[in-house]
Amino acid sequence: MKICVYGAGAIGGHLAGRLARGGAEVSLVARGAHLAAIQANGLTVQAHDGTHHSRPRASADPRDLGPQDAVIVTVKAPALPDVAAGIAPLLGPATAVAFVMNGIPWWYFLGQDGPHRDMRLPAVDPGGALESAIGLERTIGGVVYSASEVIAPGVVHSEHGNIRVILGEPDGRISDRAKAISAALEAGGMPSPVTPEIRLEVWAKLLGNLANGPLCVLTRRGVRDSFADPLLREAGRRSALEAQAIAASLGVALPDAHIERVSQSNMMHKPSILQDLELGRPMEIDGLFEMPLHLARLTGTPTPQLDLLVALAKQTARAAGLYPEIA
Image 1 (cartoon, rainbow, N blue to C red):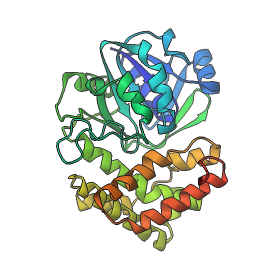
Image 2: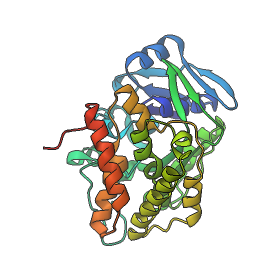
Image 3: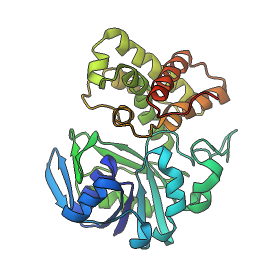
Image 4: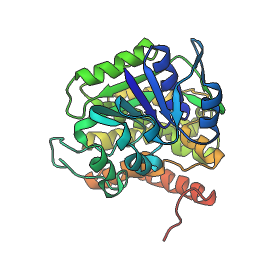
């Protein structure tokens, strides 16, 4: 299977290494020193099950790679306009595009039954560029659990074995194309269930992002260190409860067990949004934090703690020059 990973940073690099290990014909869209190292020396993934080396094709220009059977988009939300502008050369007549990302996806309400059916989300798809360039008919939703970090150009380190990529069609079908991508990932050692309830999985991941992301940005420490303070652990639990309420207001019932899982987290790994702050990279504040709060306001769901923590996280990002100033 011919698969391109669009955005080969930590997560994308890990997935590309898994796909190559499983026998897929892998290519990468990457940039900078990471791209140069992959082109020169290949891609190395250090994981719980060994060190995996591969030599995927890699370029900053999708035109060098040509049409694919599938594209897996793993960029951070601020880079999505670049994906919309550049993805066309990778798309054949039947190419599926799996968005394996954090936060509320651009397609969330498209085709969904309910009071918000077909509502667009310009904050995560400015000008409808992704809908126009890719379209709902090609789109597969995705959620990834993989505590990964680029520790040197061309080298990705994955912290532990609790990894998986969950895939699902926005309309709830268990499609052959989603199963094909899943099989390619699983052949390389990455568990990849296909679900009929991808929106539930989006919120299950977002629960953790909202519970620990703003707090870790403010403390500048990882989850385990931040949650060592009982008051901050309780704050994380309350944030998760508010996120659960937002999901419920949209018809997604997250079990209480998810709250306990998040509040008991002892993950040493720093959330990606904290890594971005430390490295001076664009931060996913809008997709991860602001969009869920926009949906809370849409449904009239009170979120007093998240409102405060997100406002403080934004100010932290502004102080670092990584988020727009208040007009």
